[in-house]
Image 1 (cartoon, one colour):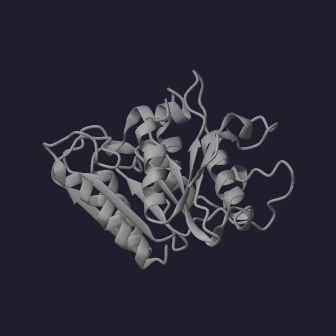
Image 2: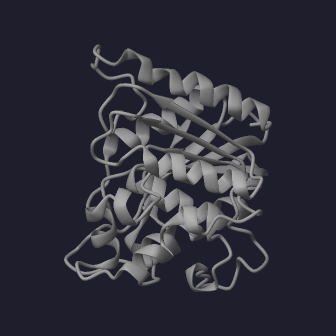
Length: 267
């Protein structure tokens, strides 16, 4: 495994220089699949246990990974910076895939909580022109569409089931219903969305499980291949489900289920 020190997405761009990418690339002389990891934190911070440990788990499966530390709440609305940073990271990984031993046709995205919202932005809004930054003009024709999407107890819905603070941190404290709806992904699913794996806990009191139910229904309506797992117990933010939580040991099953799902996609 090669774990480089994190570096800015772009050294001088005003938006991209504020995000950092840490690669966890495998080195064995072949082209590996790769996952872009987007930790959660309510768009107010980066949750460390949903970053590096997740990348390390992918490495154990023979999959390269890269963790993105995107812009979070700094006292003012941050939209669309995280979206621009995440799409740029996807395109950068694809553009530089061969030099890092990555198969450009097997690059996916995974996000947790608010990072799951950002992963949904990548998966559903990969072609939004105002999110596609290219300061050096070197990414023309490079797609930001992931080949697989994993949404882990993700913030995907506004309205009654919204995680309100995530939307306020992203869009500002005076966010309107119309603005929030624009970022409510069950309302904007389309047939070009990538195959999607979702998991949640029914007991989540922070991000209601209905976020994942509604997202899965939207994927079904668009005939997008998807797999949804809901575990009865477990609080929000379980990450890999490996840390001390003997009360809810079932949550960790998501990793084995996800591994088989990824294998089915050729990852």
